[in-house]
Length: 289
Image 1 (spheres, rainbow, N blue to C red):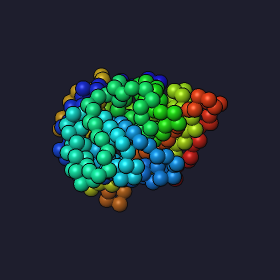
Image 2: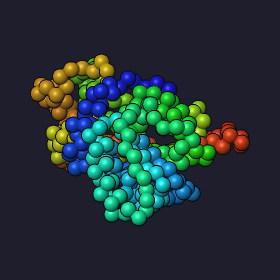
Image 3: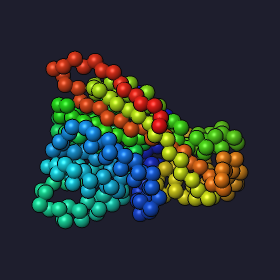
Image 4: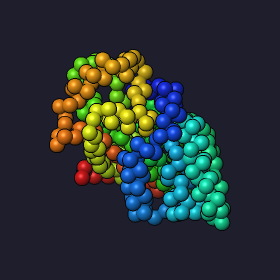
């Protein structure tokens, strides 16, 4: 399944630039990470080799080590500065917990070209990173290949209602694509089945962050690296005239003196199909809460 085309170099540059202040603005990302761990605890799983795919600053690392005490934990991200943050964070945690003997690797690579051998990973964890790929099927096929038999893939990503206020405000005066498009939960489930996974389970939560000013919204988007990365995008999105127009249209969403920014988060997990069993599967979807 091919998505809109993302300019990967622009995304890398945005995340490298955002790495220093990312965690100060990534409130939602941290909440989603905690929600993923709650879901993970409900699954019977004891991975010895774990891949944190699109690891960002490595926030999941300490809990993954504490929960599973894996033999190998691999961090992969295509933004070098983010990966360095992950290394710094998890090196300190590793030194405090050296007796657990978890070997850590840090790989700077694109998730659409995962440089790992087949059948080498017991669990792939990916928190809010899949939305930055151009070909979801290609990513899923690679994840399925590197997983061991009955290996687990657990993830979160953004759904199509994400930032709908910003998208509608932009559409009011501009014909260009300024906000990334996101994939529907049902399409993600279909892709998992198509790429060889079994028993996919997906659900959606909708979160609304509130801000006092429009500038605060744009500040957060900038400092989590979530800048427009579509090829063919309009230039000059940060010009004063453009932002003035955008703010004027966005103000119609103000309620109780606050401006909302909505995020639709898709949570999911699936298992590598056991080839000895019937691989026919039914995707389980759960409605929005």
